[in-house]
Length: 342
Image (cartoon, rainbow, N blue to C red; front, side, top):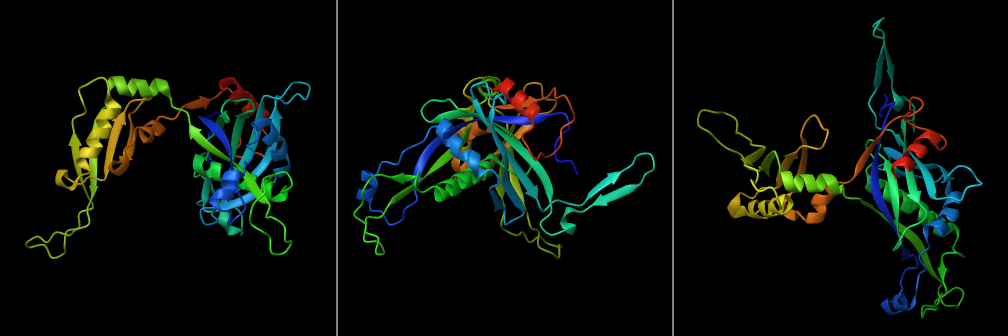
């Protein structure tokens, strides 16, 4: 079945931060302090990444496989200086259900079962549009959303690609620093190997965040998971409650809503106050037809966790042709649209 719309894509806004980590094991803390692992900038890293096209890795117990299907610079015109790196990351979902296609005139149904053949699945494409120029090792990045593949998995996959890059190019990703650890085979000091790593963090949709913080919530519901049974007279089987809920009136205050949520969660998670596990809040997004609901754990309602709920998203439309779920090469129209909103 089609997993994505034919005329639109949802793009999420992020910052991509580059760092480096040791690959060499058994280094003392003193050796680590003496080693200065270089942190490449995005332009330098991009030149290396081009060679990693075709890298694959499985996730979710092998039910989804990601691949670096294509990679190139933008603008596509080789005469124009590059401003962005484009990644085409494909995901093959091997655990999809049987698709049924129906002809509304003939009423004929056709079934497509991707699981009928080993290692076959639904293919979907996510596009990453990464700025080559940033500050403090951070670069603005856009990602198009695909089902079953959260941003964290995309981050893990890019780091997997970077690990393979460092492994295949040890002469590049080796520190000059000397260590006190001797290689028993060569009798020489152990080389300090490192790898570049990235972290993706969602950008806050400040307009939406401020709107909710000022205008308030439409509903607040506390939920507690139940693990006990109830024996009632004249009922043969035990009654097994699944959860208890407490609906409370949202704050009348039109400011400080996020801090109010934090205080409510902290209070009601205590056993003496009900021991509630989850707080569900409803609010209305701009231009949305129905309220949006978000669940937060009362164990750890940090302001940054609340803010992640309000990651900036843009619906990208206006394509020149119907879009496909997946592509084998970078789709220029999608990249051009991402450039418009970057």
